Image (cartoon, rainbow, N blue to C red; front, side):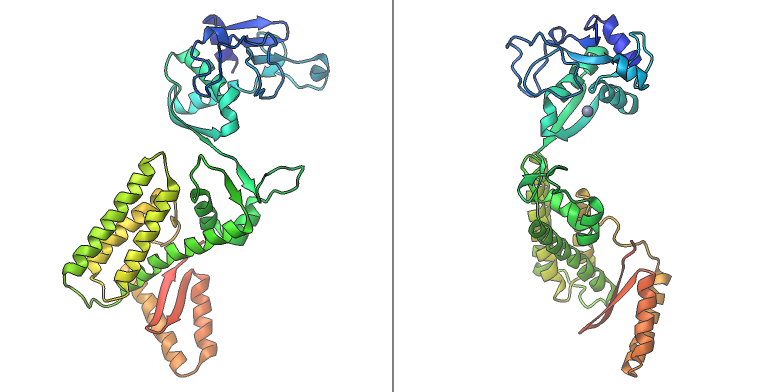
Length: 357
Ligand SMILES: [Zn+2]
């Protein structure tokens, strides 16, 4: 940070004042472009040395803040060419991003309240130093609300990640975040989380149905009009998904397309699917889910031998059940569950899936 500030001073865009080093926003004509703040308004003569983001006024902002005597007594300072002090709020972002990601970043995200002054200041510092465009795409998200109010310590209305994850699961939480466009406010309530949980379960159920169909015997090797129209429906939903995502990351629209795709697959699977055709649909479905980071932990790579062994154990258990030896058959089911192999008994027989946490 000290090196960065020195370089800004060398370029003549910063100056040393009595209480610290400041960036001179008059030296950066593009200042305000991101947030639309009006720089033709007279800049406040007051400098911004406080450690707060001031949303109201245009200021020269602090790069290095000299410590007060009281702070020095408490040991709150670093040595610098400008005396004991500490960096301003904005400078660390410019320095960190540059050291890890280089002069230019493709995407920079942040809460909507950070556009001005924080991100304006990052741009001013970084572009003044490097002469290159700092960020190609800025994405500012609306705030996460909780029961219609903003989350705050003083209101005591916050929930911890651990609570959310243990109550609803990580997939449901991810789904909830995606369910509303990032530029729209998102409201966390028990109800919205339950909706997210149900929707996630629906999408996952399709994966279960596909898994089971693929494991069962081939009954359909035909490629008829039914297969043709199924596949064209699948590709139509993929196109809708991509169109939504291309439209400023409309994840809400993308999820709509995913649900339509899931419904299409469910219907096709229910009646003697052609496995080759189903696999094509599966590939598309998985690809779209993983574009949103959904169900990435699902499905452990298994080899043929493992799958055959699971079937052998499952048959052994069915045999025990037919002999009404439920104690032993339940014990086998529980042992398998401990390894992450989940058996479920349906009308068509026992199916299995792997769920490793
Ligand atoms: Zn930042």
